[in-house]
Image 1 (cartoon, rainbow, N blue to C red):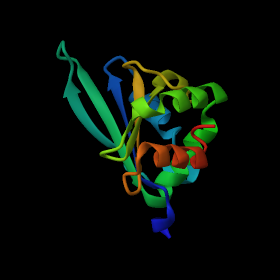
Image 2 (cartoon, helix red, strand yellow):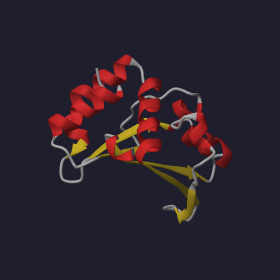
Image 3 (spheres, rainbow, N blue to C red):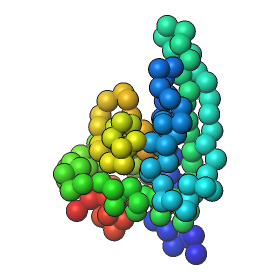
Image 4 (cartoon, rainbow, N blue to C red):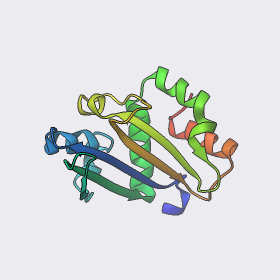
Length: 151
C-alpha cells in the first residue's frame, strides 16, 4: 500500500547549540510527528564544531512511505492558515523539480511550544518533503494541497 502514498520521504534536521538543552531541542523536533510515530523513529546525533570551537549537535531523522505521509499531514494540521497561504505563494521557490523535494524551515522555539510557524532564518527545524516520482511543480503543489499544506 505504500506505493499509493504521495510522499516518498520526510527528512527533519535541527541544530542544538551549546547553550541549549538537548532534550528540549529533541522535543521540538518530535512535535513534527504524530504521537504514535514518535516512538518508532531513531534520531541520529552528530556533534559538530561551531565557529568559535563550541559544540553543536545536529539531530536528524528520516521517515519513508506511509509514516512520512502521515507526518506531513500532521505538520499541515499544525500550521495556521497564514503560513499555508505563505507556502502557497512561495511554493515555486521552495520546490526543486529535479529532486522532487519541498524545502521548509520552521521556528525551533515555536515548535517547542507546539506551534509550527514557517521561518526563513537560522534557528530552525529544517523539513524536506520528498514527493514520489519527482513530479513537476504543478503536480507537487496539487499533492501539497491534498495533504493540507496549502489551501
